[in-house]
Image (tube, rainbow, N blue to C red; front, side, top):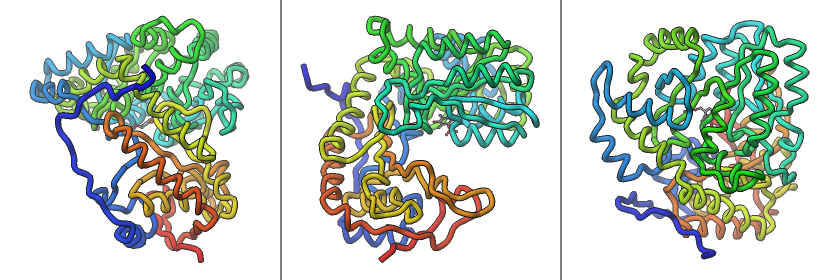
Length: 455
Ligand SMILES: *Cc1c(COP(=O)(O)O)cnc(C)c1O
């Protein structure tokens, strides 16, 4: 069969409030043309993020009712721990309220001033937590990973020569190496098994532990299955087990590939680090058998972990991403290629050459998408990264608009609607206005800045 169906039926629905273009133009004007300022019930299709926005299954909701809320020693914790260890066989599994809490604890234990933490590309919260500890965060993704048009299948790979150079110079001040799978900041691009093996080998030679930032491990595993020679006939759970066999620990945001709305964990083999991590956990999150979560959340994660590695689900997930990417390419809209695991990224700077980077082509496209169809996307460009530490402004390397797809939430007709909206905008793209910033805070300005439309 050519048609790949959504491998689920819908038992419970959330109504979408249908709005008019006039209503949306008023909403976005009142929001200072910042999509983060919108009320989400004024949004029809919300593609702002895939984090914490998954639809849970009937199995997960019934798991919620099984949650045991004992302060210590809850059976829900042990079910959660078993589900994690079934895929990621680390000695110690420490639940946290989300991914960044696991990062904060890990770098408080492992990093300090003068240390360096390399990664393929640090996610923004990971980088911030590394820097909070006084350490330096550096990105060593391969050159292909920085070119949006390059079709290399594993653009999340670490540059092994650069890692080798860094470790041979400075391994005594590198407490650990991180690898982000998939590479979110780099466009949701996967890391190959060969590259994971290579990173492991370099780390072993210099006796430096390797940790995965593993938020989208299942999407990465499926992309290995479909893109890397030798893995077509290996099951996804076995691919996942091989991936994690090369690591000494991991941080996880369960809001991505565990199908839950909140949760995360830190897992590792080093008993000394684990003891220190649990001490911090008790100060900042909670007792080690619940971390920052309720027993019911741990149940939902345990069940979500079994569902996320189902190949029917992953085949549908990747096919729906591909479907959107192919349609945009057919229209002539430039996107980051190849399409990664959780989102399609439009190259707004190339699409809107009449809007210079400092008039924010990504913001211009994101606002237009909202007014046209009530679709909320996320600018990842000069608004997000253009402000320099000294307060001046520079164009970001790229001006992208990310269409992140929540898991199991939207159907193909929702995606067709998104495609039609983008097609409409494509015909009048030369008339879209740029923006300037009316007000902005000193840090992380994209969340709260207010904009004015340029004439
Ligand atoms: C979301 C994310 C995080 C942080 O997780 P939270 O649950 O949002 O705190 C870390 N790394 C990557 C790659 C992510 O995508």
